Length: 270
Image 1: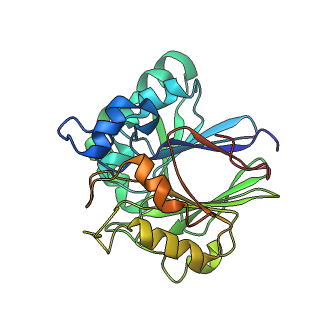
Image 2 (image 1 turned 60 degrees about the vertical axis):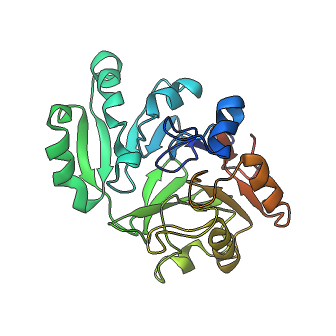
């Protein structure tokens, strides 16, 4: 189990940071300091010699190169929004030139037809299945369980459970539905949507930083990690300013691209 880990490939919201069209303080910071760059949100679960992607953001190619990932075994898509599936075509030539067999792709039930309509050329690249809420998918000693999120379309977060660590990953959610909250209660890690730095423009789909912190307290999570962060909405924010805000909350951390969380109880590596 010591090698099992959860890596945040990206920690940004839809526009990413920096955005080509924006010159706010957050985007200027990201242009000047590479550590402040936020690619679109996605994650990699590594365990039992397998590598499982959760979402394929448009930045997937550069994320896999950065993390030196050369193989992908399984893919789960949280929901059918472009910033979470837009990089799925990056896996085509990996399958054709190296893997030589399809990748198992778990889609939201409502997205199966959407996938086939959008990517007919990828039919041979994936073995398409649909995930089921509350069903646990084994990965060695780990279990991956899709749980309902509260978003504008059918969306899952994922509970990842090892013999020693419980990690809940909800990059797009407005709080948690009543059927989900008890199942993430007391998690070692709650990685959750913190899209807005000020006013929440979409309170039925996303959370602000303050709302994410409040959710972490409600869920009694040991460590809360804020992700899906936008430096644009609704008040421009730098990473430095965010760290200053979080100083008053020692159990809360801001995600960053490449953050690694061991699933053996060792604590966040980087």
